Image 1 (cartoon, rainbow, N blue to C red):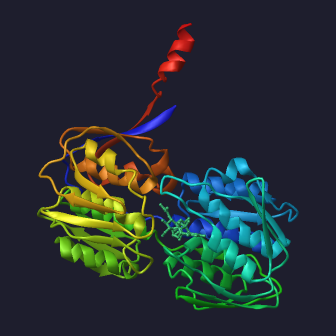
Image 2 (spheres, helix red, strand yellow):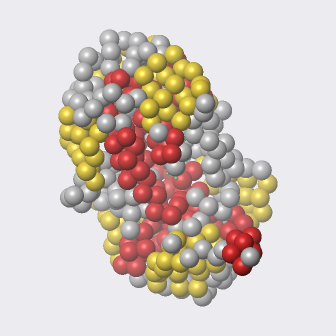
Length: 437
Ligand code: EPU
């Protein structure tokens, strides 16, 4: 059985919503728990299918994992430190599982992790992860689709700049690999994302000595041992940005609680250009209001603190209904446009050329069935449905479940008409013929 969202457009969203903890901070932090014996407790963890999958991967690596016995709490007990192989069946389900490479290598001296394939965002190589691990003294080889890293890291100088900018999970992997031992590691062109700064803070709370978390130069002095920790995860800035887009596309008024306004400068900037009123109520609260049709603007996705690629599709949804046209340029994943044909099904006017889209706002979208192509694109499609006339069915919402906690419940509480419905997928023609024979 699969699930879909059925959305009835035309409701103005208003009220308050609380942001969950950050998925992209939680996943590498769960992997980082492998670095110390004992019981690590993570708080403010979102209940997502990706988090549950990372729990299964950790169990296969000798941990006992208890998920959400208390809301937001994940407890990871490292019991057996022998396993070094992350199983393909689990790893192939989620790219972020590659984050176990660095912690396994540092703590157990060896790691075999399946090489991730491409995905709907396009080609996603791991050469920067590998280059970084090699630069700190470990050997890396490839065998039957696995990346095999051996030899405890000794420290060294690492440059993580790639053609598309630094790698976020690549920085996480090299940082985790470098924290144990007597060497000193300097990482230049490290990713500056808040999730990396938060991971560095978590590792330091375990006894690591990492300086410069959240900047492009990390200095890591290896230590002999780390201890388990009790650590709270930052709010999800992408979920927060998605609710800002929801306010804009429904001409709504949403108070977003438990967020971090300080990490959203690029979003503030775009909102000002688009006529979306975004105000900081206090250190943890924002208000997003949009009484009139937003104005179109151009969007370029960039590494942090630039406009995040993970908000490209939700903000493209807003552009689809804005006044005028805007040019969207994807500088992180040039192929992250699988959603464009789906958005067109609802009447969007989008012209795509290579890594650029020209989006001309239409006065009224019209509801239609359409499918999520990745988790952010799926959220963007739901937003389109909220603004469209009539009913929109959003299929393949398992993508959305990977990254948005209780998405439809939060939207319903803001006044959206949205329900989650189970359905049986239509049989393919050949299945039908086979069954009939
Ligand atoms: N890249 C390389 N070589 C590498 C690694 C990356 O060329 O070895 C390229 C990628 O192909 C891409 C760019 O560098 O063009 C950035 O990729 P990055 O490695 O930074 O992405 P990631 O670490 O795999 C994380 C998030 C993504 C988010 C990106 C970019 C997690 C678990 N995932 O992925 O989140 O889009 O950073 O900000 O942190 C999402 O949440 O929807 C999501 C896809």
